[in-house]
Image (cartoon, rainbow, N blue to C red; front, side, top):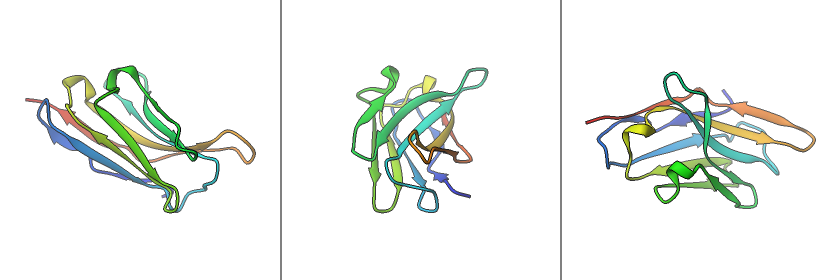
Length: 117
């Protein structure tokens, strides 16, 4: 398994969770690490991503609540999720991709996040 995600679970609205993704066995270098999520009946969407240079990108719905961070030496990426809302429920997938040669696009197995009262 090239990407190993962990940290999902059940949390009440307003709570926090931290997701971690170990991509140490995956390719690296000029790569973007990110988290995507897929809610039941919906398409997979970008939650947050960070380039090897540290540029971050967030979905509008999570700005100010989620923080993405990466360790370039280890090729790992974390997602700190605060003030969780019911709408944050879904399966969260870690992604490692590079858009310049050599191109690659790897996905983790997904971890379930359920926000429920």
